[in-house]
Amino acid sequence: MAFKFAAGETIETGLRRIVAEQAGKAALAARDGADDPQAAIHAVRRRCKKIRAALRLVRGSFPDYRRENEAVRDAARALGRLRDRPVVLQTYDALVREKNLSPDTAERDRLVQSLATSMSDDPIAALESFADEMDELVARSEDWKLKRDGFVALEEGLEKTYHRTRKALKVAQRHPTTLHLHDWRKLAKYHGHHLGLISPSAPHILLASRTAANDLADLLGRHHDLDMLAGSLPADTSLAPAMVRRKRELEAESFRLGGELTVEAPDAFAARCSAYWADWVAEKK
Image 1: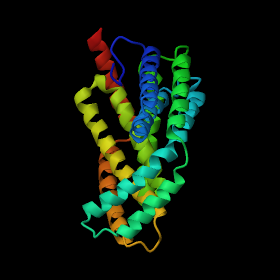
Image 2 (image 1 turned 60 degrees about the horizontal axis):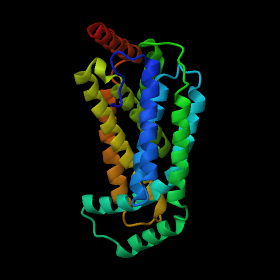
Image 3 (image 1 turned 90 degrees about the vertical axis):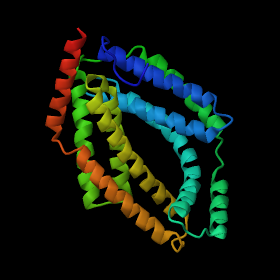
Image 4 (image 1 turned 45 degrees about the vertical axis):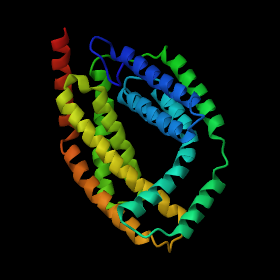
């Protein structure tokens, strides 16, 4: 089934199903990742973000939230550095291409060598260990219990994530540091997943907002990739001016889109989603 709650199921049943599906697919992708470990790492980390978003949505009703969220976070984090290294080179090539720059072959060769030297970890072993952790998560999810059902089980997590996303925009506008923009990106991604999870209640409206949230996260992701690239090159790199210009472009577009996405007050946003949910439940009876 899709990554969303379904009509007729309790929130507890839906949570178990959603997490088991995502964790099961992540384990399968990890075990099938020998031919292309980097693609597998990218895919399973996306699954982990979806799982953590689902957990965050029910955080106010789920006694085991903190433990399970940390378990998924740590499993994904172990693969993070394996994912980041190839992205640096991809970002280098993309910047040269997008800005029509003259490539510095010697500098690129040094970057390739530096990345190759640092990639001593075994991605296959890491993926196998990750798959085992996902199997354990699926098994634990069968016993999960929530304290509430219906929209009230989701409301706290939905509103809190929206509020934090909105606040993160304001912080990033005042101080557009690498850390602030990266934190904003993570929250925007969670918010987008939350919209997708409740989208059956008002698909035309909520899926459009989810697309906007995903677009925002993608913009901020490209900004983060440029920061990683900058940290991998010498300070006097010929790409420095182009990196700064591209980051400013991404910031401007992110601030515009983020402002549109979170223009509503958090309590008004939660009330609107509650009304969608109530109408949807009534229609399905």
